[in-house]
Structure formats: C-alpha cells, structure tokens
Picture 1 (cartoon, rainbow, N blue to C red):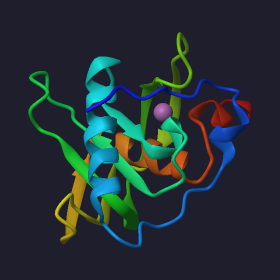
Picture 2 (cartoon, rainbow, N blue to C red):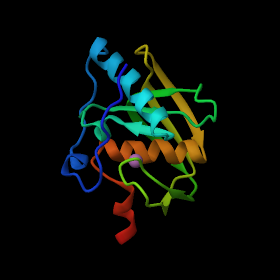
Picture 3 (cartoon, protein in one colour):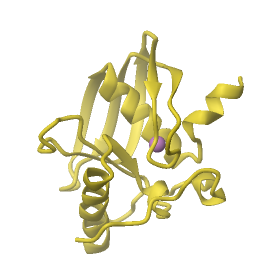
Picture 4 (cartoon, protein in one colour):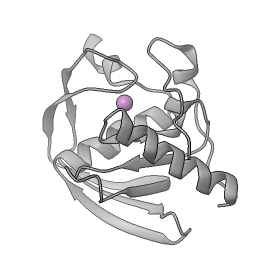
Length: 149
Ligand code: NI
C-alpha cells in the first residue's frame, strides 16, 4: 500500500470530471487500498479519487472512530434525496477551512462495492453529507463552491 498525494485547492485538477470505472481490475483494487490508507493517515472520513488525481468514479469513506468500517462506492449514483441538513464541512483538499453547506439529509445511493457487486444504501445525516460531498469531487466540485452563492 502507499500514501497518495492529496491535491490542494485551488489546484485545477480538482475541477476534472471523473469517468465511470469500466473494469474492477487490480489497478482499481490497489487504488481503493491506497485511498483508504491515505484517508486514514490524513485523517479524514471520506476521500474521492479526484483528490488523488485519478479521474475515476471511486469514493472511500469511514465514519467510525476505530477506522474499521470502510465503505467503498464505485460509480455511485444518488437515486433519491430527502430533507435538508446543514453541516460544518471540511475537506482534505481545503486545509484549515470549514463552512456550513446545505445538503439533503437522507439519500439513497446505488454503487458497486470493492468486490464489484451492486448495492443500494440509504444514508442519513453525516454519512449522507459525506457521500454528497465526495460525489461532488467526482464532478469537479469543491464544497467552498457553495459559499459564494
Ligand atoms: Ni472533500
């Protein structure tokens, strides 16, 4: 495994749009492991491949204090959103800044897991916020983009 360099805002590479993973090969498996290690080392609760300069739709997240609840989302798509929540967000790519961002409070997301199996998850609260934040990264958006509105 290896620690990956995290791009720092306003690096223009954070604006690139990620493409869907077509084949869950060894390279993608290694990317997932390296992203998890990088997230844990930072430490953070979520990381998108865009942040380590890989334009593929891969997200890792772990909200546990013990760092033993890794969740992997490959090609994530949000199929429904409900409610509103505003959380003080931060980002490993925007060190030293936190700000409240309006998000859906509950989402249903469909993705592939690390084994390439499709799953559907309904997430509420912080996990829902985290997934929305990370999918934004895959689309070239950073949370500070919301602040100027
Ligand atoms: Ni972020």
